[in-house]
Length: 353
Image (cartoon, rainbow, N blue to C red; front, side, top):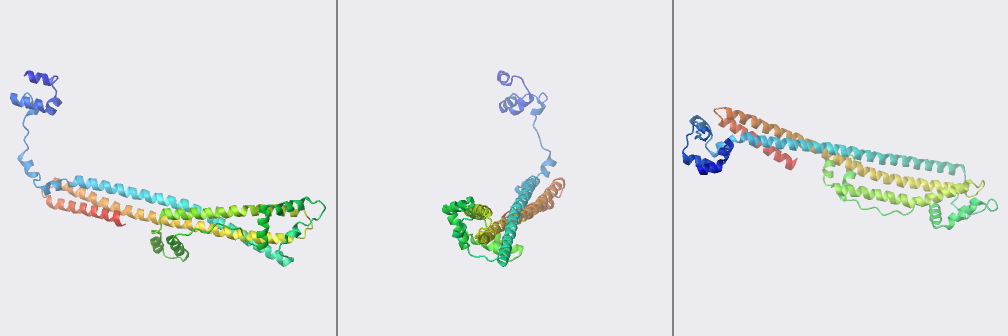
């Protein structure tokens, strides 16, 4: 008993239950169980023993409700995850559609400006005799010590002015960077959209286009557009300065010819800028379609996972009823079949849908 007193200290129920050494001491001491009823031997009734599954298959069947609950929870999480991805792709597609709309607006505005330049040039040539731009005529002074003439001469002697007037005389645009080669799968998808192919065929082509390749293609198209703007900016500045100087010369013989050359150059520039904006807008449209197709796929997968979750929940209900029923083998079989079907269906959706 001294050993017992040293170990026990304040004797509590939890101490006796969870301390194996104390339990062994009480057993050796053969203390009356009336003093400690919780130490009495626990016996399972024979009826309950007979009702419990004794085989491995039976024990597996008895665990069916727990397993099916875990599977149903997993499928519910997958369904929710797929729906979240579908909503994200829809939102991203809306943002990209806005960007595509901006590029199409630029395209339309510049096409209209190009048409206005062409129409004005046609009217000018129909109403007046125009000749090729003569640089020497621009420098002829109308009045002694004309400030406008001196300004034009200063522009002609500058490197930017010489390049600008050379382009005006030739009716050409400044050199721009070469077109970056576009991936074949991107070209095929663009051609399918232009030819109004069915959505299923376009979707099949877009699955071959990775997001990285498409993003890099858009960045390259934007860089080419920016490079063209940078190349034409000095020419536009020289043209604007020359036109301002000519406005100060009332009877300049080269004013009409310069106006015709300016209109011709502006029409070419707007046409080129419109084509660049059209290329960027078309690539954005590819992104929009790709994300919309991805959203539809995730939505479809979410529905299928939800159906699988319903199957697993049905297995939980059937197996729960089986626990309370006497003839449980059939119900357990149905529950297991429903659970396995739901699991296989979910695996098929995850891998192939």
